[in-house]
Length: 354
Image 1 (spheres, one colour):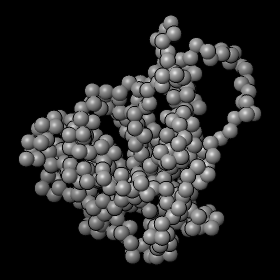
Image 2 (tube, helix red, strand yellow):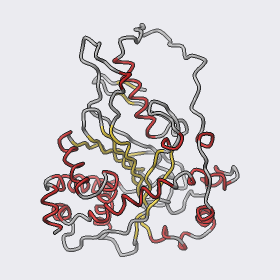
Image 3 (tube, rainbow, N blue to C red):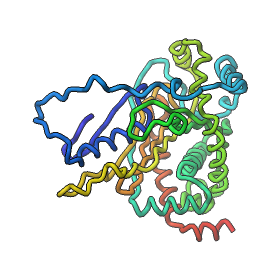
């Protein structure tokens, strides 16, 4: 953990001990300690002892059943042994191939919406029978498709993945750090607007809300079956490292990872700060980033809401996974598209659709 002079807190942790929700858990516990009048004050030079009685949350396989359906097992073995050309992945654009050398140089871009903009965007999504996740996913597909429209027609799909928290199955509370997560996979077709090319305002008017809305029940269906995905690791019989190393130098498995952590949880009733004489600490902005530029999808987008009501978007990409110039256009196109959508009320969008 690092603390900057402007009260920015940077918390970095390894994925083996924590999932995305664990980042929220850490900041929630940090705020609780800062705002508690029972937290003992210690000199800066003191070494704070860690109690020997602390225990980590049990691993995922100890907390819930990770049964692998027969159809999923067949598909996983197909991914391992079948040529890429036999699968949809062969027709999907996934950036550059995985580098043969392990380089972890990562680029990051940050952008956020004000609380008022966030509220309006959520209302628009709700009016269009969408969620923030399905909207952001569709918006990225629109932007990337528009940029790929310049290239020769070689690709039909993107390959995207959305992490899903399994705490709904394990019962682990929001204040615990653990790695209880699975993944949902999608192959969205490219969405092209050849008649308007790079006109993001026109793209907002013609935004494919039907695609975004159809994704909502699709995600719910995949969430219900999501425990089989981490259970599939059993099919490797412990040979996880050779399996991962076999991907070096080959086609990348994904285009986009989209992680929506949701809003920062408000204080629980037991965390009441009414007895404080001064104003309490709170989080004005929050960003969530992931750093896996080697094997992960070419593009990573992290979304999280802060306690103030703002909404942040954090883009990450590896230098070897995708060209910087292309990603700068993706980020700028996404910002322009979201900004254009915010200019239209749900009623106006409905009028255009009609």
